[in-house]
Every structure is written in structure tokens, then in C-alpha cells.
Length: 96
Image (cartoon, rainbow, N blue to C red; front, side, top):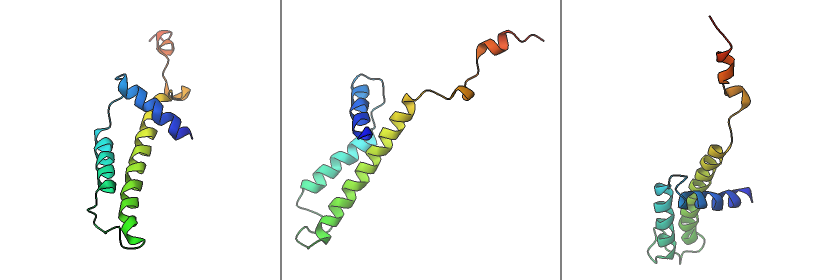
């Protein structure tokens, strides 16, 4: 459920120009939709169970790439840990 919320948040950030557009994922998702709709397949859909396997595999690959993009977007939203941040005040008071 969190992925869906973050997906729409990422789309909003892309539209506002605050996050780079993931072209590779977009193009593969578009290709996936065309492949699923197209009557031409590597494995014809008339073959029981095997015909749907190539469509499902391609769809799962694209969904995994979208999830990876969501994770990258989410990691950019989280602030760094306090231990990883150096406070400038620490150096200002220190004199040699």
C-alpha cells in the first residue's frame, strides 16, 4: 500500500520537475503494454498456460523496475541520519 502512495507522490514530483523522469522504466512499461495487447508473441496465447507466461514475465519485470524506481525516490525523501551529519558549529568553536 505504501508503494502505491509513493508511486503517485513520485508521479507528482516528476510532473513538478522535482524528480528526474525514469525514461528506461517508462519505455519498457510502454513496450510491455504494446506487447500484451499485440497478437504477436514469443509464445502464442493459444497455447494453454505457456501462452500467458511470457506476457506475465514481462509484466513482472516492468513492475519490479517500477518498484525499484519507487525505492530510489523514497530514499531521496528520507533525511540523513544524525550521526552522518557534521554540524558546522563543531568546527567553529574549535581553534588551533
